[in-house]
Amino acid sequence: MILDITGIILAGGTSRRFGRDKASEPLNGRPLLQWAEFRLEQAAQEIIVVKAAGQELPALEARRPLAVVEDLIPGKGPLGGIYSGLQAASHELSIAVACDMPLLCVPLLRKLCLLADGYDVVIPRREGRLQPLHAVYRRNCAEAIGEEIRAGRFEVISFLHAIRVRYVSEDEWAPYDKEGLSFFNVNAEADLIQASRLLKRNVVDPNPETTA
Image (cartoon, rainbow, N blue to C red; front, side):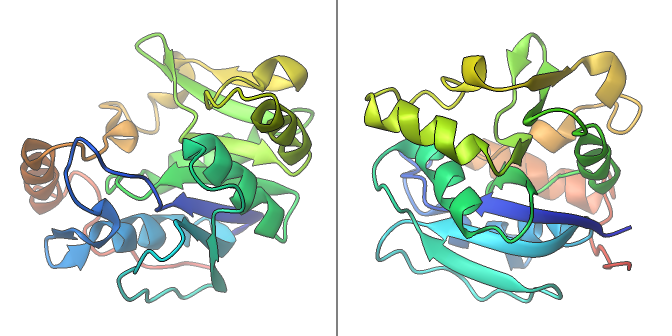
């Protein structure tokens, strides 16, 4: 099921802990960015990839309309990336993820989007922590995010006080992803090895197909 939404992938992080550009890092024969792209395009009508100025991205093979945009406000972390993605999105709703999340669960992505009626953000909690890089954002969030950036506040959840938020508990998302692998991201070599093993075990479909 393809929803009337935009999928935003944040690819422009500095990767301080990993030590090199994660978007291009190979995982089981494909760059990390491509894994996120393949998952999102099973839920979204279009894909927006947000990159840093001058960043070179790996080849993309999207089967949905895809655009690559540069950060409009460089150096502001994920908050700036979400802002840039929302400004480029064609749809009222977008779901934003990081490029280093290869184990995204497509049914959960769809479920979060379907919970957005009446809310500006739909954001899961995992082990008590919010997951803003696996969340749904309405277009009007760009205004609230812009105000935070202009005020010098760059924490990715700093604007939530200004909009309508739907928090998603573990009890709600666990039926779709009982191990919480959707929120797994690659921050170190050990994470890359673990992701490879999980994909080989078919914990998630290693060759997702886009369905209309």
